[in-house]
Length: 118
Image 1 (cartoon, rainbow, N blue to C red):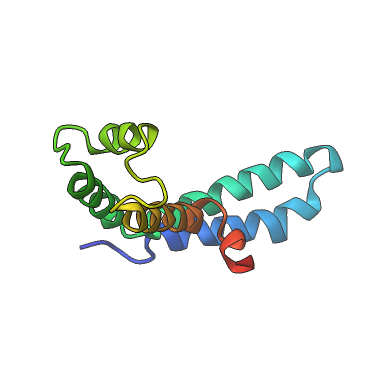
Image 2: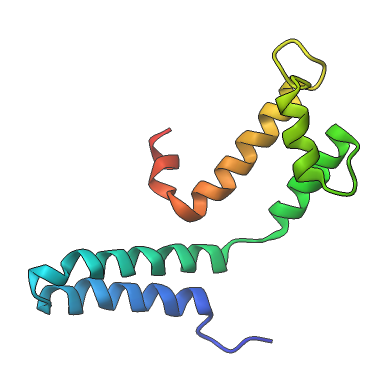
């Protein structure tokens, strides 16, 4: 059982303090570095809050599409390279949906504003 506040909440608070209290006090020459640190903190907070089960689900879907139980990621990539999921193939729609789901999960952490635009 974790103690409150949770890690993602602590990171969010730290980011807000950095941006709202410390950044205005820093010389302009350190502004970019402070914003980069704030961005990294935001990514870490979102990653810590995200349910990691999406990764196992994605790998299971890759296994079912390729039959490669040993290394589903490499098997899926190899199948894409040889055209196994090109338009018109039986599992094209499944592969596209899987890639979209992976992209959404990754963007939720690294670029959530990009998702809001679409």
